[in-house]
Length: 278
Image (cartoon, one colour):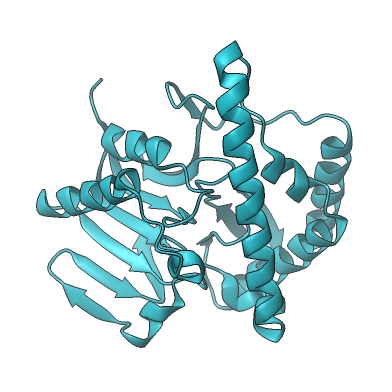
């Protein structure tokens, strides 16, 4: 299959060095695109879990693929996140086609785009950092359980089970925090004169446009490669949300998710919260 030509690809929350990471799907995506610029939008290498010395070969293949892309002329911006915050003491730094920064501002078609990880708006992880790390460890355990379950049910041709994702969807407090977080991001960026803002951090992919104080804001969360396998892509003069299907064999563009049951209720609640922003 011919590589897709992109101006910019933005991926976030790979969480390399954890059991939750999906290296095969990441690698398949990176090999399927030919961008002029690749933005690694934080939490790429998970230093919170790196002390366990877990960095298998397929995780290293992702790193090697990114290096290959740089060798072919792709400009790579590594934006620091909270799980790879150790890089912030080196930022900004440039080495060949690699730049490590805390945020990235682009001007595209006369409009300003801000790309940053987004953890600076999540006050909870800094007020109780030990609790955030404990939560990350717990989610890592759930991901390990997922791997074991899927290894068994996969023998019977069954669809992957995602306990990690189900657990996240049922945390009401986390959904409420998400609404508050995204309101803060959007209002702040509108005040600073950005027309588009792209972040990660929440692991919840979103692509929407809304009015804030009569200003049009395009808000994109590029999601993650732990639960959703999504990316933000810029081509043909506009931003798009890319969604990889569960097997990684097909490319789905801007295909809306149709939730059911409790998920539908949470989605409607989220939409109503954003409708009050203006």
